[in-house]
Amino acid sequence: MKNIIRFRYLIALMIFSSVFSSSILHSQESITDSKPVRWYEAITVNAFMSSGYSYNFNKPDTGKNQFRIFDLEVNTFQVDVVELSVKKDAHGAGDAGFRFDLTAGSSIPKVARSGGLDIGDLDFHQMFVSYVAPIGTGLKIDFGKFITSMGYEVIEGYDGYNDNYSRSFLFGYAIPFTHTGIRAGYSFNENISSMLMIVNGWDNAIENNKSKSVCAQLAVIPSSGLTFYANYMFGPEKENNNSDNRTVFDLVGTYSINNIVSVGLNTDYVTEENSANNGESATWTGIAAYLRLNLAEDFSLSVRGEQFDDTDGIRTGVVQRLQEITLTPEYRPAEHFIIRADLRIDKSDHDVLQKKNEWQKTQTTASLNFLYAF
Image (tube, rainbow, N blue to C red; front, side):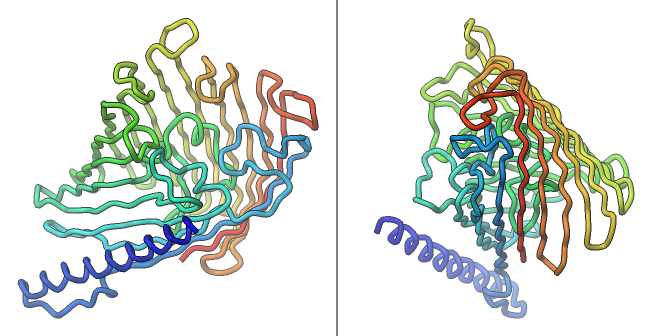
């Protein structure tokens, strides 16, 4: 009953947002005496759905893939996520807009949900308002909840999906999923842009201490097809702790060599004060490399290899080194429709991966994934 009430509340919120944006548009029209713009012409509605199946050759008694992010369940079909995205873009100086992505599903919303935002089996991956201040080329300001700018991989939606079905260890353990706060983005020119955020922290819709975290990004395009992103984040993330700061250095590089071959690299270095067993700073680091081959108009092949070092066991609960390699063929039989398979081998330097009722150092999984986006 509570979920039904929450869902009705969310529908009412959508309607209110649409009416509110319509009022803003009509007010602008009366000032500029331009041709009337109907509210449904300014608002864009998109949708995304992902469903999949995963099989673990270890046949673990727990029925879980160990140290996975979203593909946790073994030997079951599931709807990972269904997303409805509604937005009104803020284009030029003085323009305002909004976006919210409402999601439901068996895996992604439950795992990626921010602390303090409990709406049953639903989640808002993003919900923010935007304004472009008339400063220079335009200073875009967003206020609300938004997906992190760190990492090579994303929480998939209509406007982007990953090369692989399963997520990397770096995606799940090295960096946050989302932030709630304020961010400002500025493009100096077509090759250099920057972003600054002041937020509650890692995956906190409601602050868990009295301090805020600061995040900055610099994006550089030195040549066609080549892009670098440098992210930095600093602030305390422990509950009711305002002094033990966590520092993140996240670097991402992408290079489209031609229409057939593209590569990517992601590396993370993170420290947190007074978090190791000896009272010193805890550290976790990782690196992931990506290769995508567009072998035909409707077929691609992607490979990912990575290593994640949880030096003090803070992120995975075990002092260990995790490695994995993933092979993902992708077939696109129709517009907006994607079929993917994942063959993945995980390895740890400790016996933490379950095979039936025992523990060993490896696990192998095979997955099938169906995507639709518009």
